[in-house]
Image (cartoon, rainbow, N blue to C red; front, side, top):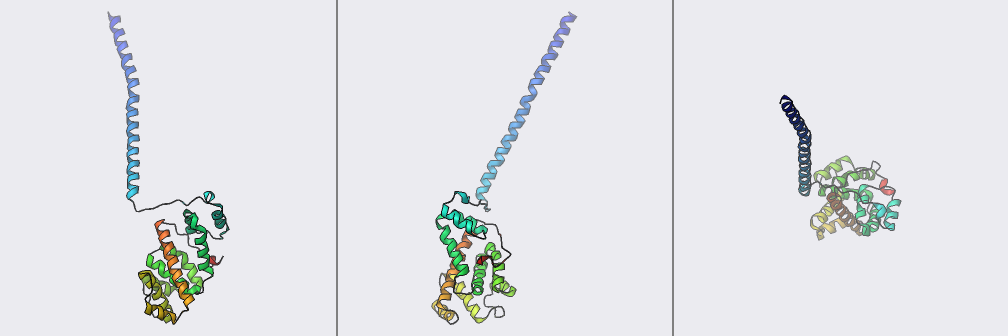
Length: 235
């Protein structure tokens, strides 16, 4: 009898041990599943929040996958600033836009100095940090002074200490193009007293070009990569 009881107790003990040994893993699995579900929920929330976040992060296009004439144009560029890299998303317009860029940098009748005053004005008006920072060194190389940078940044385009009569008329001419899409006839005639028709035509192209790329740069949230040498645009 005692043997039977002892055997029974031993068997029960073994059974409990066996059950305990097999019961632990399911508890661990349940916890693991809960962790996975938690991570999935967080991932879903992150994806949902990304849709309503104002932050934009776009990878640069892979130029090795673009048409040959686009790759060749890009490869020959001595300085590949980030705007040019992101422009690869418009392969059909890439070459013409780069050609226009080179023409604005190198072939205009309007002086580099007056052109840079207009570029800074557009950058300030559009609040385009990339455009402004990229042209700090370029404008300095063209002769723009610190007090003129400050006046343009603050919107005081009629500052008589920072600008001559000729410069103020040019800035008002450019500002009218930005604000209204055209310069009023009286202002246009006033500007003609200081600049040739070729220079004013160039001024309109400069304002339009930099406003266009400002929209592209800011929408794609392109990272600032300002060049230290202001003469790189002549390369």
